[in-house]
Image (cartoon, rainbow, N blue to C red; front, top):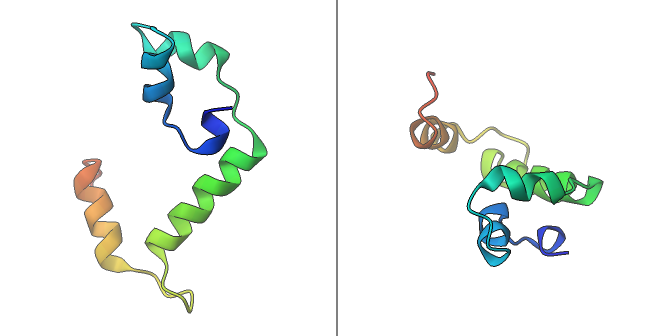
Length: 69
């Protein structure tokens, strides 16, 4: 229920008292709704209203996640 309402997995893990995130992942379910909400959020970050790509945001994500461009 928490994950379906936007609570991060790390937060749920701590609330349940798990010391390892993998333990929480065993019980977590990825639903179609989770996927849809996450992809909608990513779309808003990466694209402008007219469907144009936001290059600056992509560069920011590359830096944040240390991905080679």
